[in-house]
Length: 298
Image (cartoon, rainbow, N blue to C red; front, side, top):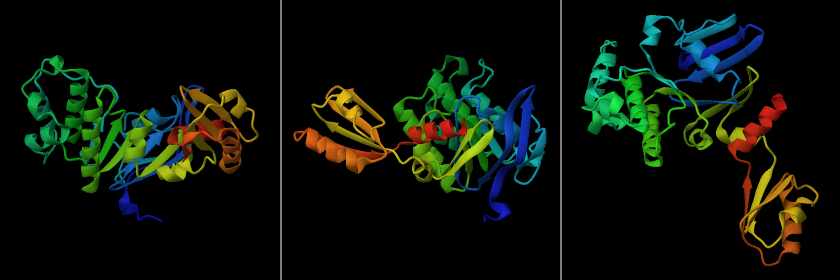
């Protein structure tokens, strides 16, 4: 058990319905200080509703929602969070520096402008109008605004959409720095490599319920399937007909086989093609694990 003082955000038996649609069905969830919690699941699973409840944008029909042990509407609790949503409507005529100064004014002890700009990687664009920025630059400014109050909990909803690879890597580095200093992060993302790179814990939500929770490795281990990949002259049709093969496909010279019994399939493979090369066996990735958990939920 983790002491209550380490819990920064929680939902306890929360239910939420929109008309005849059940968005959340008795959801229990707790996020701890100094961790990245990735909330994953298919569209319509209840992720957006979960964030809306924690941010106080909507109220539960049943159950309890808390931020730092308080109501999400409590001003003291709200001053301890930072929010970067998937879409943001900001005054486009303002310069980046003016936007930062405006948001800093909402907090009694905000971060310095220089610190905010350095963390978000926007020092070079402080004097530019927000409307003149590229999509990726605007996302970095939105991240900067989420950091203004030196939050203890960050809500990041698809934060790296529109960022190039270099900017995404820099973003990940900043998140690791913040978490290392005790900040908690609730992350939603469709980039599963982002969840694998950052998350201390993953929660898989489907049909309004939490179907799996744990480390990335724990989630991946729920799938017994392995992936065999090699350079081989065998056709996917031949390999796909073997017992224990769930899927076989070719990508150029590469043959990929999915199987829950890799030892038996490897024997078949080596007997059928003695000239195969670059053989590797991988466990299921997070994408395969999420797919299987979602199918179980259905």
